[in-house]
Image (cartoon, rainbow, N blue to C red; front, side, top):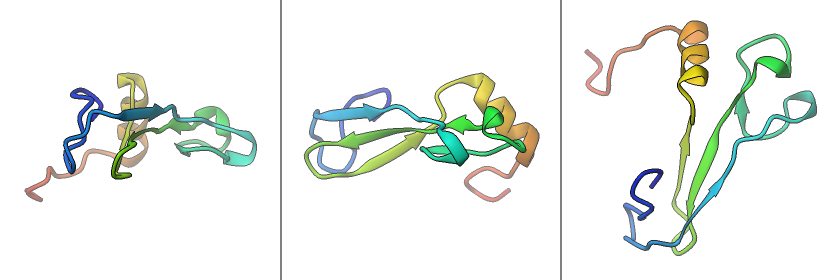
Length: 80
């Protein structure tokens, strides 16, 4: 939905983006990668306003790099 702006479930084109947020005490839609919220990675949501399907995305390469540094490389979808 991030790129097509079309829901993969119901094929509607009414998709809203809710930007990731980092609030006090870790509130908001984010992943903590440090000891404080200053190191948190925001997670944006893309929501189909027709059926309610939701996808979550990390929006920037810099934030993806933080996650790789914290959690390491993992196997792909095939598990290999």
